[in-house]
Image (cartoon, rainbow, N blue to C red; front, top):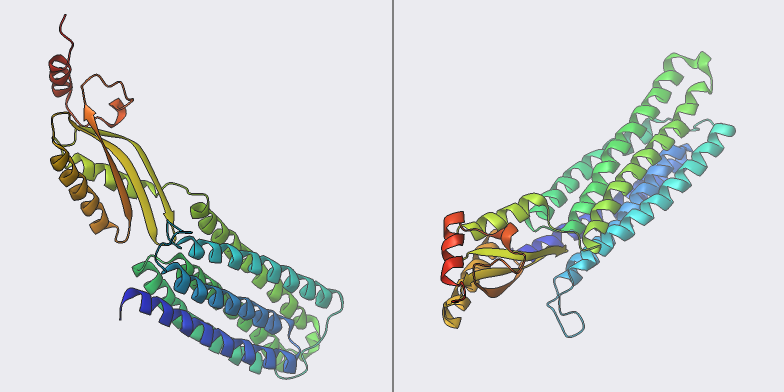
Length: 327
């Protein structure tokens, strides 16, 4: 299965699993009257929307560049992450609102909380498996949409465990400490508020990660360092570089820079060199778009190129002498 088909397949799996969990959680939450289980159903509902958005994003971002989108459609993945984060914030606000209402007017859980414990355990197990698949395929294909969906489900794992523990305490309390009455039932809305807090934290991290590429932020320092080290490996054919600009849209990296070469190098030789450099970078970062602009090196460093000069001081002085005007 090629990378694109793997991305679509795992995105469909996320949609299917979240649909099933939403149904189970809503039914059980309404049956036992648990706001924390219902809040988890809402959380899974948001995850379902996020999974649908991720599916749309991975299918759309793979479209080739066209006249209206000459740089491709990669930013659909970044947009999906931002939309997912906004949805999470809204869901968290609703959960807190419902939980506070139950804190003010506590309601006992009518049916055995063991049903809630069971559905939360099922939810945690399913989401753990699916999130691992999303992370693995997302990292292998450099898909921010799948990784964002993975973070949604991984957060759901921990919140499901939190709700499961809260309901478990209520269940045990009702069996072994009935004298506490409805006091233990306050655990349910408190657990819901904790769920909301974890959701907001995940949404904040997701927003920052998605917005970074939407704002055309440079590539991570370690990636730019690798590119610069690669240019160094082409010395002495490459005498220096400057005006490096990098950004990322979805899984596609856009890398451009100017290199300085011997002014007597032929057009054919400089073209071959540019192709070799671009190919080396694309081997490291598959699917990247690399633009190399060639400039002649005169040795006088009048282009602000000293910071990116790859020659020794002796070589710089020698080139400067050979290009020094006579008289």
